[in-house]
Image (cartoon, rainbow, N blue to C red; front, side):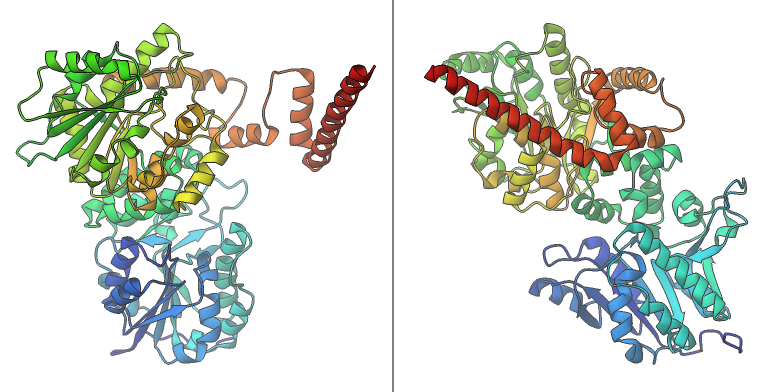
Length: 625
């Protein structure tokens, strides 16, 4: 037990900062570089603990930090620091304060120095930027009477703690990598409890007692930023969207507040695009852009745009040409034809179009590509799309699913064409998104769902094929679970650089190849640090919202509470199937007796194999007779 009271940070004292980060393919993100640059001002000695780095990355880091320690990629929470703390304890104990931090926060949002100087004047042993109160079951005080624990993404530890037996004992119990998320949280609880029990004084720069919620770094981020907190936890943007929906946590507004405080949010989106499943990021970041027909920004230099129109059906072609030639900045339009007999119709339609002077026109063959997609951009038009010097590529087609009804086909065309090419002013606003956001790689219409069964079936059975293709292309972005964020209609506008990976293989023809290709754009862009957004007119946003609200209301009628709860229940029970008695029996087993399910599944597979073998034997016997 420590007897003497803690002191202030000494005048002229020395501070070390140890920053643990995860490297992706030998590189650290721009957001990490930004954080390290901010930390440089505080540190007499700045250390980065990370995995293997490329020579170029080590050179860049060498201009910012004093030391690079390679020990494998960082674990989660305090576990990220375990090996370093245990191996470097003696060397770090010479500093008056050691800050243990990691890449689980974005910042600095505003200056760090005022916060650090304020905490230097306090008589403390350990401090963090934020803390959290554990809620008491049945309490309505939002955790106000629960125990307090420091947040592990930033721990400033003063010398007498670092040199203590209690500190050494604490780290002996913290492994290098937590087996589960709860173990990472448990390490934070253990730190606060054990150091407090040892007599050390702990505090937070922005204590939870000053905020309405028990976890202000999750639920009151706007208030923290207003008070000058320089960090926003990564968890705000990469967590479970239905949980955030339940608690009205809106990542888009938090990012806007960060921008108002001077943080370059393109670094945030670029980092997250490479590390978070695209649909999760799109939902948490509220990345649907509803745009007006009136051009909002004027007086800019036009971007150079290549248009690629894949002609499957001839009927929509005149309208699509009329829309495409009005795109601001369009310099060349390439028509690819699935049928060689379409050339005359394409040329005739172009002759009647009122194309602006200087727009080049070209027709190329893409024989056999009868599916409604734009794989031609990365195959038949690869030379122009990827190496033609264009700023953006517009990819559209004239096809629709053959199984669609007339109404469904009509709505599909309207939704896809309108959401990209509704009017010159509207499309100018779509293009402006790319000017305003350097990390934006591709935009496309929201998933069409009116007249189509796409929600919940977005992978169309191709998730494994997409995963294999991603592995082949070197794409490590996490895969969405239920449905991908993708231009399932096959139409989009994007930066060539963002989608370059899709041009590294030849795309075969056929429906399965089409389904795989159209689900890869956001993943390919994310791998290169670009994020994806969806764009819509106000009309289509209204049509979609009304339909989704009514559908969700009816789907929720037999459930209760928030979607985060009953969705987990339904997923645990599994597919309803055809709603037969045997299907409900399977759901009951999966939900109530999950440990039985594996055994029953194996028995079922064995029975199916036995039946198949029996049928084969009987057929042979009949033939022999």
